[in-house]
Length: 616
Ligand code: M6R
Image 1: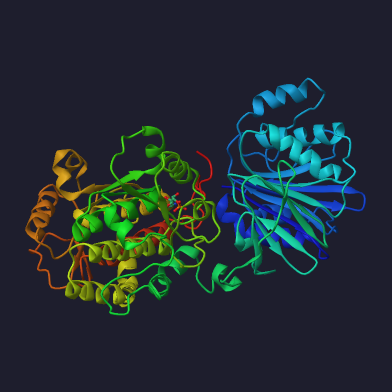
Image 2: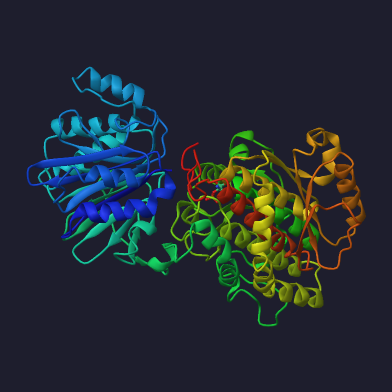
């Protein structure tokens, strides 16, 4: 939520900042703004709405400076107004700040500052922090060894409670940026006599692949020539420069109208990447380099707990199903946001897994910290190298699907399903699964990119169906066992990008309440794969048809549906139970995408949402 970019170097800052904001816009799009240090002071432009509005506004300014900061906002404190847009400027004009996060004690700080003559022109917590830095800047005598500017930022942050990723400039410190983080991501791009600090690699990848992942409590001081990192307590930190493996192409549309479409169609390749190098030489199990857990420790685990939010929670539910089914080990899947406050009694020797694409979701991070506080080992299934979750867990499995930019998660989700299926195999083979069953399972996993390709080939037909159903305002998604979470995912996908009310249910639960919704006005998307409960699924569809409900049935090859139960049929390949959830996800992704496009929705930036949810 919220994206920040800061630039210091030799080029015109405004151009680089706006380019960076465009790449970070998925993090929030309520307003955007930039501030540049000029020869004669500071120049600020900000505007509600998308970065496009800022670009128009920026034409009325003459941005010539080579140092600046910028922001794209997902509103928390204060409405969506020009005044609440970032960057903010302290009332004495000495400090300008962009911020991603929430300053929780801003009310008491504001009172303190108001009593000392500072004034405020917005309703934001950020403007309070900006003035707090200005207060310390005015008050602190410069330490002969330290820049007064950096010292004042550190002083202010020691009093700030909450979360922040910030970038700060001052007209009195030309060519300098101070940036810091606690609980919100911040990455430093190290170029040739230029530096970019940003919330996400996407904003800096076109300039450099050399990055430093800043840690909580670190403050970085940038000049065009150099950078130095210290802690809030002024201790020096030795920077570790990493190399980002993906290139700028991964963050481009490459001819697709939306990132969501691009990412849906990237799934065969993304799944290949998630699997690469992760099968044993005898081809009977999966292996992972980063679990930091040997087979003996693994065998001692008597329960797995999976935690995540939104789509990632749906991946947790599928992992629960597969681990219980194939590894015969008890599993619990919980919303990270609930787990962290519920204080559930934990006994025995559980192993925790958190699942998160971004690795920055605050609820998931909170749950991870709570489990660690209680002394449990926590691993992650995560797509973002260097993310906070990656750093704070005791190990884990990277998804390797490249950046996911569409707000609606697609390729990251199917990759999480795949990694969960591989983990189930890994554990199952340490327990009761035979070599032969292991080999069959591995072959099924290796075949999944092709199966997904085959479903993607049906996109034109799924689009036709979508066009016939785009005008409905309510949908049910129904499935059982491992496809119940996919029903939840289908409903979430549809509602988040098309604003259509949709609910996911286990199919047999329908008769316990949701059946009251069934009418010709509420279509059901029904998963009916080949399985031992096929006949029961068919009975549930008959119950819908008996009440004039329309049905879009997603079934597997070779299934014979009785005549008249399906208004629309989408057939997916018959496949191994471990990969069925992945293959069954593709039609609901496409259906939601085409319905949203038909309704004229902005699929990559749905209203009220942001890609990475870094506030509670
Ligand atoms: O980055 P994470 O995987 O932790 O994100 C979790 C959810 O916020 C995310 O999956 C959200 O539900 C997506 N918008 C779903 O498409």
